[in-house]
Image 1 (cartoon, rainbow, N blue to C red):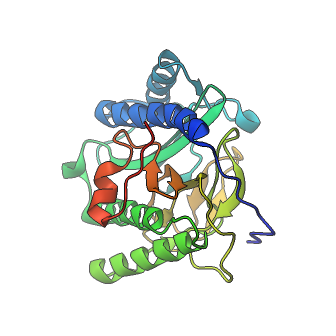
Image 2: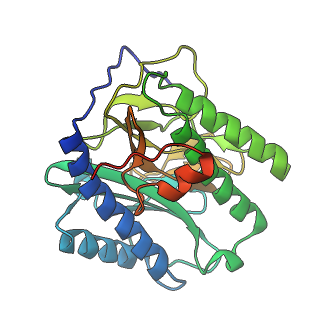
Length: 282
């Protein structure tokens, strides 16, 4: 895939970051609610309806709904679906691996995040699916940890790749890092420059500046990373039928540290585990 021309990073002011936090917090709260409500027997459309009601009642607008014709508030990607699954009549079954991607706009600013869960709870999951979910989430946090003012942006992807390779060695398998879909800048639009690969690339990329906001979102498979888009022109599936997981957070980097705008706690717990500075603006 051709990536990365001469991209620029535009920093946000403290007041703009505070506005982005409103959108990010609403997304984080929506995903927390959905993880509590998802259960076997419900349709992906029912889950989508819960998300739309929660976002609108919180003063937000769903980012995805109507985006280039997309018909859902969420992307609900099940099992071999990597990303961009359209909510509909599909009934969720116990043991399904479900990735939920959610975006919201508040006062003109965007938040974007994703989680992967096992329908019916972790006790219903296959060992390999649980390992995949955990490896993907850990790789996202590794990427977050590599984001620092003054450092090259592409360090994020290198950190994600290193984390996935380490997880593969631990779990005794080779995970696939999906290369066709990457992270991105975010602010007054959901997708902005720069693109943020989830793997090591040539060059160093633009330097991270004070007020940088990006969405870091690794998509990892149990098999090969090759994929295709279904006839609906949205849903991306693995070619070999292997399951996939997707984790994402919108993150702000300042000279004082990191603020994970889409985590309910601002990323305080996750950053503490990594020994990294938490820099929320009050």
